[in-house]
Length: 126
Image (tube, rainbow, N blue to C red; front, side, top):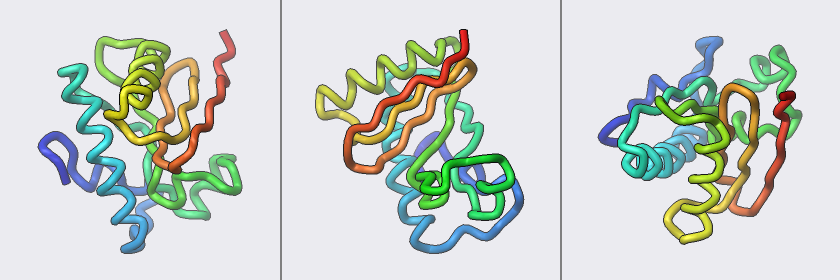
């Protein structure tokens, strides 16, 4: 998909086939994550990207989750805290380098999505 990301990293954890429209969104998401990877010059681990509706429900995901559309990834950047990752994404969006979208802060990962409009939340418990 990109220099540092392949499709399998975005596949649903339950093994569900990715619909073609979702795959097209995943390609756009991968391009954005490549920008972030290049900026940090560090590997990015994708904890969750595409989720089938049944898998999303099973894990308690939002009924309107961007993950089901292939527009979201929960990520960890090696050597950086989730807050550092979120702050950097916010800066890159502000500078017009990355696409506007959802940005969620969690204790152990950062959520980024390419929904096309600004959405921010903080679910950190510490």
